Every structure is written in C-alpha cells, then in structure tokens.
Length: 458
Image (cartoon, rainbow, N blue to C red; front, side, top):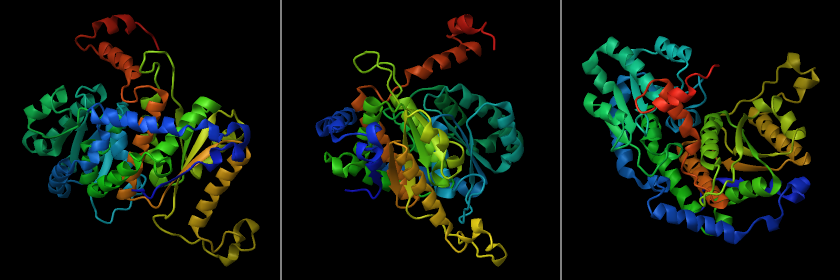
C-alpha cells in the first residue's frame, strides 16, 4: 500500500545542486533491498519491536478505557519523563492540538504539560501554575530508575498528596515502565497505581506508539486508533522491496549517501508547520541517538551519524538560512511541508495602507499563499546555492498522518542503521554520564564514579 505521504529528493541530485549533489551511481538498489531484508530479520527474531506496535489493539483499547474514565476528572495531564518518555507525548500534542500556549481544543479535554527537566525554577513553575486537585500524573521511565523522572515524581507526589490526601492521590498517578523490573514498577505495585508497559524490544526513542505516547494522547482526547491506523499503513509501505513504493527506504538511501559520499554531516530539519515543531525535536533524538555510534556491528571504530538540527519555517529563515546558504557546505536540509493547513486567513485590504508598496502586493491574498511561497523560495535559494535539500510532504496534520509519518521516520532510521552497519537500537554513549550522576548523588554501587569524578570543579 502507498501511504499518501510523499518524499522528494530531486534537489539532492547533481543536476540540481552541482558537485555537492548525488549521481545515480551513488545509489545501489541491491544495497537498499539488503537493508530491508536485514532489518526484517531483526524484527522477526524479536530483537526490534516497533514495527509490531500498530497491530497491538489490546493495549490501545486498555489505554483508551482508562483514559476515558480519568479525562473528565482533571484539567491537566502532567508527564514526568525525559528523552523518548517526554518528546513523543509532546510531539503528538503539538501536532494535533497545536503549539503551546495557543492551542485550540473544541472538545475541552485536559491540557498536556511535560516536566522533562530538573531545573528547580522550571519545576517550581509547574507547581505554582497547576492545580494539584485537578491534575493527573503520568510517570514514564522504561528503565524504572531514571534519576530525573524519579526526583520529579517524589516532588509531585508530595504536592498532590498534600492537596487531596494519599488515598485519593492513588487514582491520579499512572506509571508507564518495564513489565518485569525496575524501581518504578515496584513503586507502582506498592502504591497500587494503574500501570502500562513498554515492550522489552522497543527502545525509548521508538516508543511513541506504546503507552509512552498513547496514554498521554488518549488522556488529552487524541484519537489513538487513527494514530495506529496511519502507522499500520506506513508499515505496509516500509516493508516494500520496491524502492519506488518505499519512501522510508528512499529517504534512508539519500541521507546515507549525502553523509558518506558528499560529507553532509549535519541534517537541518526545516519544519514548515508550527504543528510539526514538537515533532522536529522528537526526530532529533531519534536520529542522533540511533545513528551516532562509535563502533559498527563488527566492533570497528567508525564514528557514524549526522548531527540533526531543528529549524522552524518561516521563523528560522531570518535566523539560520544565511549560514545554510553561504556557510560551510557540510549540511543537507530536509523540509517538512503540509498540503492543507489547519485553517485559512485572508490578509485584509485596508484602504489606508494600500498606498504603501510593501503592503499593496500582500493585501487580499491568503496567508497560506505567503507561507507556501516562503518555503518554495527558501528551497529554491538553497538549491541555487548548491545546498542539497529534500522534502517530506504530509497531506495534512492529523492523527492518521502523524502516526504514519512517525512510523516512516522510524523505519528510515532503522534502514540507515543497516546501511551504516551499526546497531541503531542501543545508546552506550549516554550511559557513562548516567553512572557518574548516580555516583555524585550517592547511589549505592556507584561509589567508584563518585570517587573519580566527585572532585571535578565547574
């Protein structure tokens, strides 16, 4: 099945951008097919599980049943998490209900708040602005021991218990974690919290279609069935062994070739929709943590991966494009575009201002026409400057297309892992900092890290 999301790589070719572009000889159809086959083996063996999530209807039904009971009791849903446990819920919220703080919600569902930092002022601001009597709390940590998440949990737990009492507070907390291990699981069982689980074969940055993303989405009134439907259709396209019908593989081949053959070590994700701004930050973790690896699967030092940078159109035309057009030619630009906007606004033809040339040519036109022209012009200018750029286009931004788009990007990432020959599903580079933090905070078993790094001065 062809999912109706389009990928266009015309402006990455040498015919469009000169020597920094790609030749047909830079692509090997057999290599792409091998990537699909190789990844399929990993999924079938149980090593990787995110492609199976769209078929898990039982979890979706359980999540929606729980959320439908709690939604009417609260005004706010507070997510305690970090990384994939926070970026996914935030991306879904901003995509469907709009960017904070100007969301439009005709269904009058609770608003989403994401506490993904332990800056004391940041945490205090949540406690000062939310009503503990009308707040539900999703504590999300697959490992069950994330320091940031558990510290904010302790603070928020005390805040809510003081307001409504320990007995009533039980019904306001829900945990999302590993099914078999971890202190968060033990706490949830001891406190009798409702608990949902992240499959063992799904890593945090690939977990947006597990209860990590589905539970907050359902609590704020998003249609999670449509999310999974879109992802299901994206699966069908992504398993295709025909390059022309597999946009995820097309994109993976373009990204990999621009990096390894043309030295494009940075990817600019230029989201031309404020509704996709949160999704760009979700993607930034997905791309960076999956592909930024020191060694390949054979243990050879390779230092792979592009550095992802999020940009917002049209805002960042005025803050970043000068660098992208005339600075080092070490970047590729990926535009995220939308065919149909959420609403339409006409620029007024105010007579008092028509005498001004800077106004007259705008008057009477649709704002969407200007927005589209801005993106088209930016693409053209970067192409003229010899800067390779490609484009994803969504027909519109809703649950179906967001579910499909996220799944395509996850497949794109998995295929790139196969092309690089690395493990796209681990993250050894972040583990040392976690261990040092545990040592500095006095956690048992991490004394050696405290001794080695505790004397370091700022």
